[in-house]
Image 1 (cartoon, chains in turn green, brown):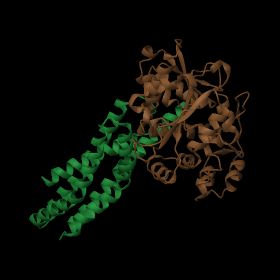
Image 2: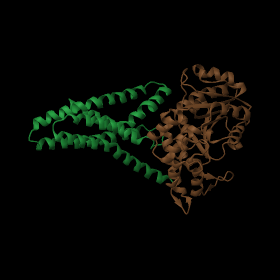
Image 3: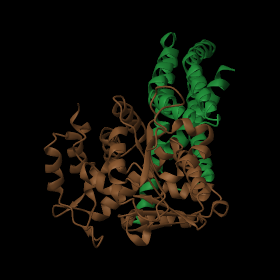
Image 4: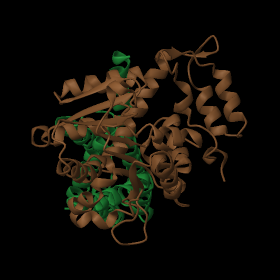
Length: 176
Length: 311
């Protein structure tokens, strides 16, 4: 259950990364299909991150001399990570839900006062969440896995942003 | 105050593209001139941004500047989208149009966006407002040929009923019933602001709506965080923050409008959020022919409280 929750949070994070990196890069008015493609790219990126994390997990478990102890340690670390990631995700989702209110002032305020700052602290939340998760772990392998997953999560938005920037630059150069 | 926030200096995008005011021909821009302009203000952020601009023999590379301008304007559209600017414009434009109709003007109303850039406002209106119901024509005008070409390309790509023209929005052939602008009016300062508003007083023009940042002491700080989180180019970040320091306060706008365009009743719309003392990011300088004022208040309905004194 803990791993499934982390996986779902990773998908949500990927989805929002895909959306964020595509914003400000398409000047059309009607762009549902553009944003839909961006969301799927984000989910695909999160899927790649999840598969790499799972592969690392299986490899580590396969080569471990104490697989049961490793599993308990990993589950405990993952459970602690949720204490940071879940409230953050709830806060983001709450603010996204607020945007359903048909008021330009409320929608603008959620964007400026909440979603912007929440985006700004995303890397910090990821670092704090992973470090808090592995801080009480007994095994070095758990800590290495945690750091590996941290690097993967941080590189997701970077990679999506690079791709979106390159696509935008090519498009604009064709126009000028 | 930080040097980059000094309102006495122009924005970088005001300087990197220059046109002959009569022929609209693009002029060469010497990089050293720009560096000297910002050296006077000790604005290191602007200097760094300008130093990074590509050049040819000391002059800014026009093609690369166009690439930068389009990148910046695409990003700026994101800000308009996040602030739901299209909705805000229509919230005010709709009662203005209704008031004009009430006064007996039946012809097609020309809505002119002055300094339209890539034409977000006009394209949004064209995409979301049933033109046939209101008998309106949406036209965006800007001096910059690259931005106008992009605005027309985007409108055409989506089949939007609006057009964009390069030229002077106040020339007789472009005269409109309603003039509006977004983030433009703070570029006019001192006498230039008076001259800008004076040109509104044309026979066909019934109203003007100028949307711009509302200055207050926290605005540059808010703008700083907003632009550093949302914008990706150094020029956009610099100009976005500077524009909030350069924005005119309500008193300056009203005095200028009442002095230069006495044919209109002028007021400020949407300065505060609901009935609280919290200022909105944008406020609007509204000008309306005197005979239309009572009708506007009536058509605004529950939003009438957002409109300050019109005189």
